[in-house]
Length: 308
Image (cartoon, rainbow, N blue to C red):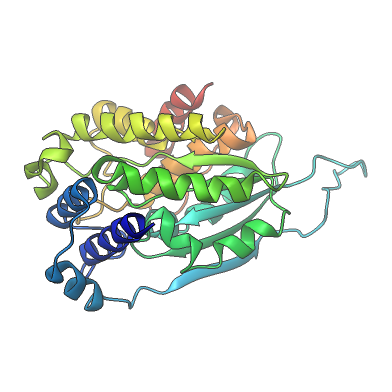
């Protein structure tokens, strides 16, 4: 038990320090690598503890209530008949979820499909959060326990699956256990690698290239989804295709990590298709900031990757 506690302390200290002073959800590669090494050796040092004590805690927890155009249990069609019950989806994650409001954009995408779907979405997010953080630092446990969700989506810190897979697997297992006590289905959000040229590629765990890093992210997400009877949502897969086939569409913000509106739009499409069965080819909508021709190209990639 003492060894386990030491492991969790070291992991928490070194990885929380990773997000100190940076944009929420974007850890430095040096501290992620250090956290991985500490987790492997089970060692701790006072520098890690001091860094954890000094870590920036300004990124607030975001525990959105359900956001939907309707609160009815079922939709009434124009002819007065009852349509399908709405999808109720809880997103548990960090800045890769709340930047550009991925949950709301997914709901908007589904609403513009034929036939339209109603999504009631909620979120429990914290800047830079690892999956284990949601056990104590957000209201994710309470939100999951409401047992009113169709899906619960879990998203770890963007480098966690590749840099510290033991942490990712532990958090995934504990949260999945809670989800499986409810009627909800479980989904894991596969994110994307850092942009080419990022300093993260100087670190051994990254594999040195975006392709190598994504291969590690994808493999770990596939493993965790299988272990926990969940569905892997292939957002990162769609990003990799778009980066190759549509280099003129900028998916990354200037930090080379977080998504632009176009990047979030692609993610929203993948979620709508994979979790809701939306036919992306019927959608002719994109948010402000995404030109129509880019929206069309991204929907085509989404449909191909997400299973249509």
